[in-house]
Image (cartoon, rainbow, N blue to C red; front, side, top):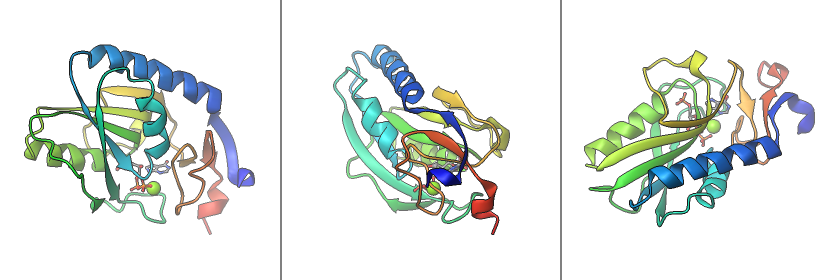
Length: 179
Ligand SMILES: O=P(O)(O)OC[C@H]1O[C@H](OP(=O)(O)OP(=O)(O)O)[C@H](O)[C@@H]1O
Ligand SMILES: [Mg+2]
């Protein structure tokens, strides 16, 4: 698995420090509120688990699974809801937890869905951002690291469902997908 990685961009320690920092900021900004924290599965599962431990306000969590990449390094352009939320977002301060914003299509779609369901507010935190790939005008409210225009894996992110369990984020060797 490690042999398929061209370069490690951020290691476990660097990610851990960033997650802590984001948690501290969110703790301040959400004080006095009771956010519904939504994990965008599958990619955000590790970030979500680490981040909520650092947000020291009462909160609730829920999960939504969406997919648009499948076994490709490019978005299909069609965002599918695989699993919907269990609870209503009506009147709630929602915090969406994403692993990466690439084209921006997934989040544009999700924000629209949650606003149409009458969330009181929708805030986005992403650990990784790849602004060079954006096809729609979208920015996260909070972000961890800005990445170069490369396909990355690890810390929850996959290629064809593999590499999610790597503890770091790294560039996948193009030979792996250019077959
Ligand atoms: O900004 P975008 O171009 O839409 O890309 C970002 C989205 O793509 C990935 O999900 P994917 O569809 O691969 O599903 P997964 O989380 O199950 O891997 C990633 O986890 C984000 O949710
Ligand atoms: Mg994926």
